[in-house]
Length: 526
Image 1: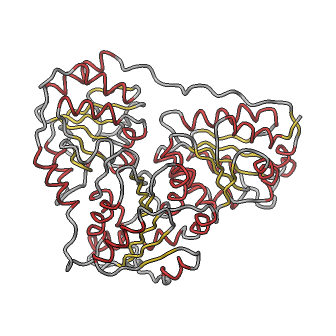
Image 2: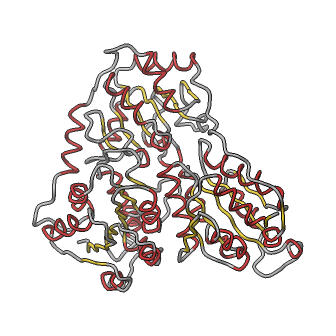
């Protein structure tokens, strides 16, 4: 016999979990001590939102569910932003929350909320573990549904009296992930015919192209047929931006040249495209394009995205099926000059007399990062610059939240990335997003993490100011004041810098980004 909390942790071990991120609480005391006696590391964070963002980014980068936990009430509600981010960004996450004993849940009681009901809209599946015997089935189901394409978050509520109860149940063995059948032959034939007959075909690579590790199959099709590729923000890296076929993202280049290219296209092969991250009305306003939908699920019903053909299958297998059916020479790279112009524009370093801007800093940052290094972007005006102007050379090396698009993800996300991958990590953030979860710098130092935080500081919620000025020619409610961020970082024992010339910025980034040390670089924007 063992306690249900010991059993739950044994089930987590069976799922291959290495770390659980969370904030301790009274109602998860048994779970915490069960984790202490296991092979799993419990990572105390400074806020539950930081814990859920860490689980979120772990899931994005590894494809394996990140795990976060909290106590009941405010602990559970503090997790919600990161869990919702995982939901809309299709990142596998398993959430465990404590709850009071069942003997008090029928009445109003201290900190008690119906957390299962609260989480219902933002998770794939959600249950209370009401009996110790159902722990194995509940944990196995949570991981299976979180990691099944399309992935997302699942939630388990664990009442404290259940956690203490004894049981002789054992973990359920894991199995290979369920995959969809191969593509339907008729749909693949029709898709190939549309691609072959198009004069200006283009591939729109979305989040799913990267998430399902379909980059190699897309590259193989591009190598043979020469079809250009434009990506959504979360599809960056589906093919290398060095490739002549890459047109970067939909908003890349002066006057959004990526969007103008897809506007010229007559056939769009949308691979792993999620409407939540980019409205199709922007690139199919007149409903004139032939669209081939390639994804693990049928297309959302949307007037501006009503595909002529849908291939619902494993994404990589579907791309290969189309490639196999289109003869050599059927397509051509019909906008080769655009790639060269885009890449040159985003890799040219700034002139010494140019003002300090995010766009100017990105070529210097790119030069200091290896192809496999990972940039975790926060949300704000700097995210738009990163999405549009930061070239990516390998899949899953630029983490952008664009489904929920939540501020505050960069610092905790960089902690998770540093633990998950063997590469240098950069957190790119604005002053607004940075201070939302800056306390996780202490978590990073405690874990001996080594990454670089770049804070683009404009003393403002800059993206909102831009929108207000565009809409009203004035701004309100967006101005901020900040502490001395260098001194703030140094108070955590972190090396910090505030370079104010391009020469100094280049030198500091060249020293910090390849280093194994934790560092903060503040760039005051002009």
